[in-house]
Length: 113
Image (cartoon, rainbow, N blue to C red):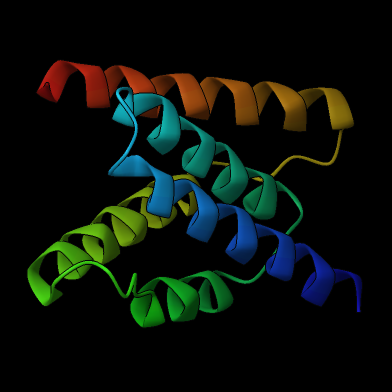
């Protein structure tokens, strides 16, 4: 039940954030928030298949297929990167992992702009 609630929260937040991306001046900040939510799920030991199922089914209705496919690929790449990193038991290490991952993803985003 808790895992489903966590996933609902992630799905809701990611949808809201991505919808606002087209209206945002700072896309990398939005991508950073998404990366943070994904790493939180990684550190909560959410199964990667659940995250990938969500990424594969993601769609923003106001975007065309090409833009939705780009967002899906971004999601999948961030998820794969997050799950390639260690899982921690300590809350302190989990928080550090989330913060560091978010910053790494944001730096990469800013480099591409």
